[in-house]
Amino acid sequence: MASQLLILNKKQIQQKIDRIAYQILEDNLNEKEVVLAGIWDRGYKLALRLEKVLKKIAGFKLTLLRIDLQKESSKLIATTDLDESQWKNKVIIIVDDVLNSGKTLAYGLGVFLNTPHKKIRTVVLVDRSHKIFPVATDFVGLELATVLKEHVDVIMDVEGEEDRVYLS
Image (tube, rainbow, N blue to C red):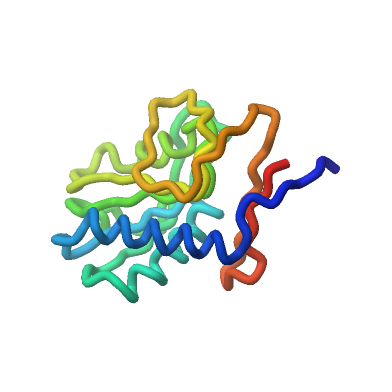
């Protein structure tokens, strides 16, 4: 097994989530509703954590949306757990754990292209800066310069007990 270097511990991950939540709040002060669209599964877990913090600090309604993507597909194949009417004409924030090539976020954006919306933003916990798709992140926990052969592992459970980010 390759050696692992701890990049973020549980406390640091929560600090990043808190900071991102405040950035989302500042970006949406005048909104009535924001949709957190988490990409299954670690992006969705991160969206759950953001929702928890935002419910404490924000005055707007939050809707949580789960996006299931077939990431290995060469074309967009996606499903959601809510009907399109639930996100139409609203602010959408797409959430994923790690930005690597940008393909997953690009596919996540594709889910919303045929529906009118106010704006779309993106959140990632770790941005590896290896994009091959023209995708920008709006809110980032940590930007990390890595070599292509290195891998970032985000470990999150629902309760947050085992949260860690490793580089291997």
